[in-house]
Length: 178
Image (cartoon, rainbow, N blue to C red; front, side, top):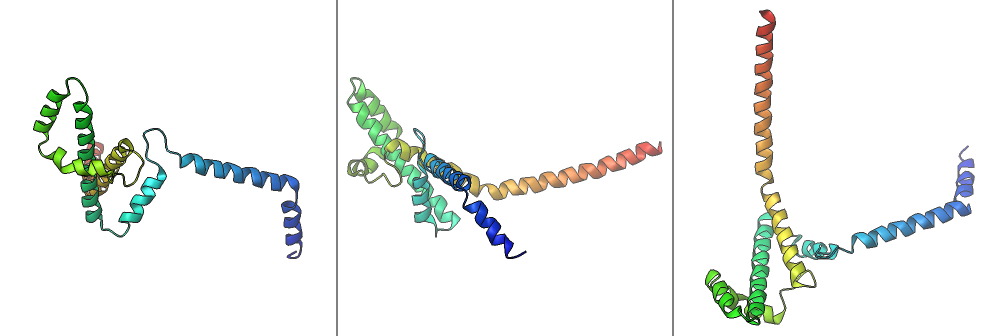
């Protein structure tokens, strides 16, 4: 019986239909890998997340949270600089620039050099994608940091439900006796 198994497998593997099916499935798999790594319009690519993971892989959760908060603040500052510079080029821009500078004092001066150098692009190819990526990372780190509180609330809800279940048993037991 043991000697028959290799011969039977060879019959299956050497058939043209099996080889063709294997090639088609391999091509479909490669296509889906390519498609999932594309990223849509306004969506950061998977490579951005890989770069972030490679850079922060050895950090603790608290260090990652601080890093993401600093990164998001930097990107928001650079976006502010870009917006102020764009407003300066419009007709009514001077009024809006003055208002922006009053609302966010010191931000333009702090991030102007970084905007001019272009070194703010760490993980993506454009400032819009970088802003989207920074916001997504911030939301994810907030979820992760609040996970302990979420688990505690689930435990509290569980204990409340167990108390209600015991109370229901007592009430139904008393009602059955009457």
